[in-house]
Length: 336
Ligand SMILES: Nc1ncnc2c1ncn2[C@@H]1O[C@H](COP(=O)(O)OP(=O)(O)O)[C@@H](O)[C@H]1O
Ligand SMILES: [Mg+2]
Image (cartoon, rainbow, N blue to C red):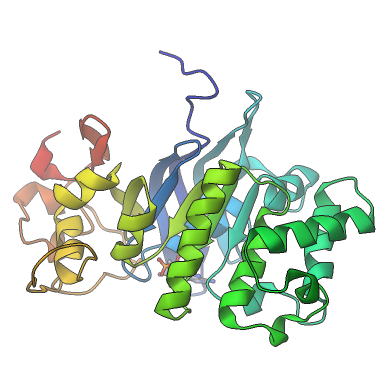
């Protein structure tokens, strides 16, 4: 069965391995990631700290520190609306194709906007500059676009902000500027890496609402990276759960929260209070620690911490497969 371009996932990551080759060890940050992003939807990417979420983002953007980082295997397939297919993993990361994709087709918003905003340029100049890299427009037109974007992200006094520097803005305003910057060239994919983690809860809610609204307006496909399951339950249509460099479960948000299949997902849900759940819940942390990604693990990487571990789990690696319609899991509990 072949899918028409509009039904195809906009982005498909296949068996992606990104390693860091250090002097004394090799860090397997991504160790065979399989993931697809549905066109026009928000996918929540969750997992404990260190499991590879940010490296996933920088691999897709080809912004890894190379060396010591390197994509050693796998594909990152961008399915363009016009039917063209690009394997990002095979591109020259400094090449023209990648420069056009970065920002023009796939944009990223980081947790801390101060690291991605240039302190020496005004907000207006930064957005205008980005627009001029990707579109043939005059400085005046680019500045008009900057003002339009600042208005779209509902920043107060947008005209005045054009002439201000990042340090003159609050954290929430800076994150709005980052979102304006990211969306200024109409990217089809937005990757948001913990975009609200550094903000107060009230500001966090405003930014999340804004992202929801912008997605509806622009029809973007979003990968929302967060360790906050409450955020995911509100924002994402689908959720992918990462553990030690692999996706262990991927499903629509409702079934994932109501009928999680992987013991790791069950553990994650039991260890945090989830918004919208009634009644008090006894929180049960997952036992043990995430193993070091420098050790090669023969079986399932979660086996040493799994309350339902079986003999086969430490011997053979389970594959991510569809065990119910649209519900993928890699776990021996669900057979071969
Ligand atoms: N520049 C680097 N050099 C070596 N190891 C790295 C580097 N960046 C990240 N890592 C390792 O890659 C793994 C995944 O990291 P990361 O993607 O940042 O996790 P997350 O975003 O899920 O918290 C971690 O073990 C981390 O220590
Ligand atoms: Mg991270």
